[in-house]
Length: 418
Image (cartoon, rainbow, N blue to C red):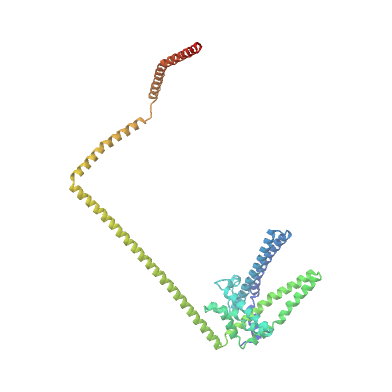
């Protein structure tokens, strides 16, 4: 096992000439994420201020929406920061191994090929186990955190090797592989304490100066704090990657070999179960298709049989009719005569139709004038005849009216005599 000095020297050698890349791999995505989160938080603050000025039913709904949006923003920032941190750690490990990733590859490594679920599961379970141990005592909790510290690196190697991956397998392997090396890792992290004191001093000075309204010096020391963090974190992460690289090249414990065998067997069993399941589904589909084809064949056969029966019935009826006609030739002759009688009737109909068509042809101007003159003559004749007929009737009416007063006069004379 290498000493702390050797591990730090290996990290410095890997970072020599790659410091801008090492700082950018971690801090460029982090700064972009921080800017996006700050902008969205500012928008939510403005909406909150506008909605809280007037307390109405709609403003209450808007406030609830803002709270939910804020919680979603916090979760988004947390998940993105986990992915960015894991991608940077993996980039530093590849740098130790002599491979340099690009900014884009390092920033998006955790979010490709369904890796984020496993990465987030390992981070979450590590945090839960560590907190549960710290509930008992702080020192045992910290030692368990040291035991689980290599989980992310183990997960990367397992994912790239295509081994069986579970949420707890990486943590279990880390716990086993760190047996006998927890003290070395603890002392390695403790050796960076002076590096941690420098940014702590800078941030304390910046807060003190800002409180005394010395903005320029406060901003200067805050910038120094940020620069020390920008250099310190990649250096520590690269040293941790060097520790893991040296650790896996040591003689592996039997428990690790047994665990890897169990995981390999579990993966084979899972693949076998999946293949069996796919085969069963394929067999079911084939059986369904066969049953469907058989059913359709039966339907087609029944349809053909019905068609043949119908044809046989039609042929039978035709034969019977021909036999009857052969037995009774008179009926056949009468039918022929009826058909012959129908033909002249049809010819008459066609003649009438042709006449109508001829009448429907457009008339000339002379023919129309002759028709108008003829119609006027007919009208004059009708008026003359009506006048002749109305003459004697009028005389009768006058005669009847002349007689009526005489009868009335006679009745009056009779009354006077009485």
